[in-house]
Structures are given as structure tokens and as C-alpha cells.
Length: 281
View (spheres, rainbow, N blue to C red):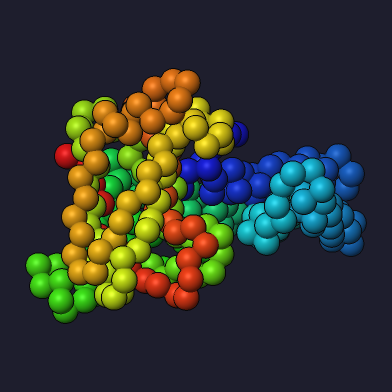
């Protein structure tokens, strides 16, 4: 299952519980009887160990070890074992075991369902990309070798009484902020807008990066533009036509925007800015 959205990524993880539920239940049915508790325990242990081994070999095949996946594996194993043992119990016990397994397995869908909620809210919030006032927005962005916190706008930014993202740049070569799950279809709009407030005494030089889903990671296959941040409030309005024409060999697909970044190249000291009201117009 491809993709790394707030829905697809946790759904891919949660499927571990159903996979191990099916695998463990099938193994139990083939190798033992509901009354053989010792053998059941050994099969449960074997299934669990196999899942752990698979997780810890992931880095060697291009994946990542996930404690969450191990938890999901365990949920599936326990639910399968409870239902299997209940086969020799009275009907009431069987029903109780089934209800227990269904409820616990269902909880594994909580994160994918929340991810679907986040994507729905994101789409309904258009043309706002990020206001930083909604808790679900936190699933859409991440720091990039920087420190990012949500805080009230500085007092000098009198027109802004809401939350903003305070981005503190570190000494990394590329330090900044990434909108990793933006609204993908920008085609109905004509401009990208955002505001930055700087309490720094000096002018800062930042870079705005935007890429689409077919981006090949080449520098000239995306939008990269330096811009200046002066002390105080800075308001930006960037033509989407200009963004679309940025790649050297093609036109950026404005119906499939896949990421946006604001960063500094090798910043000195620990400068910080306040970002807010990122949207389309």
C-alpha cells in the first residue's frame, strides 16, 4: 500500500493486527486443539517473536523498525488466541470472546480514522492551508532540523491575536519548516499567501520550496526561491503561475502539490520567525 498520508500510513500499520490475527488463528487451527493451552502459548510466542524479528530486520531492507507495529502484531495474536480458546466454551463465552476481539481489533483503526478526519478537515478548510489554530493541523506539518512551537503572535504583531508557528532555526545546513500534507489541488487559485513576523534586528534570507507528486528530487524540478524577511511584519503573495513555471523541463502539476518548505541555508546563531496565515487566494 503506497503513500504516506495521515490516513494511508497509519492504516498500513494497523493492518498488522488483522494480518497477525489471521495468521495466528490459522496456525492454531492447523496445529492444536482449543484445550491444549500449553501448545497455544507456544504458538502465540512463536508468532510474536516472528513479528519482532521482522520488525528489527526492516532497516536492512529499506524499512523502519516500529514499536507500534509490534503492538499491533500482539493485539492480533491475543485476539486470535482468545477466540480460538473460546471455541470449546459455551455459547455465551464464545460471544464474549468474539465481542472482546472485535472491539480490541477495532481500536487499531483509531489512528487511520483520525487521519481520514484530518484530511477531510484540511480539504474543507481551503483556501487556508495552515492557520495553526486547529489541533488537527499538527498532523500536516513537521519541523525540518529546527525547533517549532505554537505560540501567541508577538505583541508587536497587533493584528494577529491567534496562534502562530514560532520557528527557531538551528545550525543544520537546511533548517526549517515543512508542510508535508498540503491541500493537493491548487489549480482553482492564483496566489500563495503567508505572513512572517521577525523579531530579529537583521534581515534574514530564507528559501521557499514547493514540489508536486511527480518531483524527481532534482533541484531544477521544483520551485525554489529565496526571499527576504525584514524585521517586523512581512506579507507575501506569490503568483501560482510563477510557481508552476519553475521546473526547467516541465510545468509543475498544480493539481497534485505534494509539499512546501520554508528554510534557511546554514543559519548562523539561532534566529527565529513567526509564521502564520498560510493559504491560497
